[in-house]
Image (tube, rainbow, N blue to C red; front, top):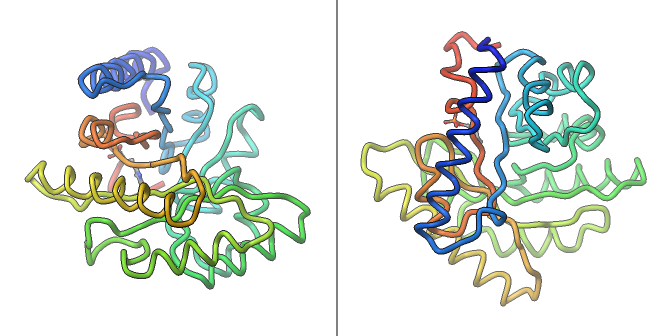
Length: 234
Ligand SMILES: *Cc1c(COP(=O)(O)O)cnc(C)c1O
């Protein structure tokens, strides 16, 4: 685990990259939130995030997040950015402030029921496989209108927008196309369904400027803040 001083320097740097990308895109830096991705790092990583003054962390596994959350400042918001299985929906609905990885009607049903049983309203994003990457989770583009319709009918869920992960590629045009596609889908569904779908969660360490150019409102960054994750996992 890196020192807080190194983390602070990295975060200053990432925020400067975000500000620069906003400047180029003619956008205000206030429109783009930095979600610090703490997966595979110890609970200390979440403590760094809070100490720096960022508001939220992203995790991709339910149990890992729950374990860290118990040790972390209560002011932080926890967002699930990894694939969620229906059998973990109850736990996820209890412990996360937002779930970004909604990609099936079945998952919606489980989460809506879990949130309703807890008497809470849970905010969610729909994860779309906008890059048509066979290696990625996320709803297929063709299935998204039906999924959105189902999500909007869930009484205990609030759909705030869309999320995507660009396919891994050496060609920057692949990520650019993916982000442009998500933006176009959002604009068209927002008009079609009469809902704002304000949040566009897209962009990571390697492609955040391209995502911001395409309208990202939240970049999810791990490596540029905490360094490389070890391949063996947590
Ligand atoms: C790990 C992860 C990130 C962060 O990726 P970096 O390249 O380390 O910035 C962002 N989004 C999702 C869904 C992830 O799983």
